[in-house]
Length: 79
Image (cartoon, rainbow, N blue to C red):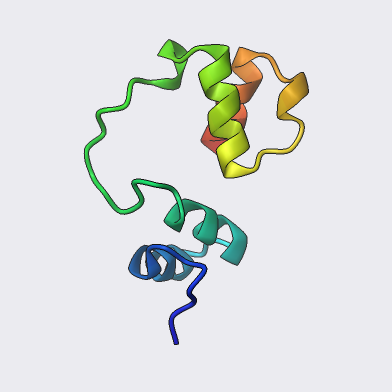
């Protein structure tokens, strides 16, 4: 039965099948453009620290307020 809290159920299931945790799969599947392809976003190195902070906030990275730009990039890439 689909979970109403998951915005993109098929992506969530695909991520779970790949071994992602429930929390991480849900976070990804609930992003505004989940499941859309494109790759048009610039690399994180071109983002401002404020943009990186907001993205880290959106995906629930703890400790983001004390991170510098490089640490935010690393955290986002490993999340």
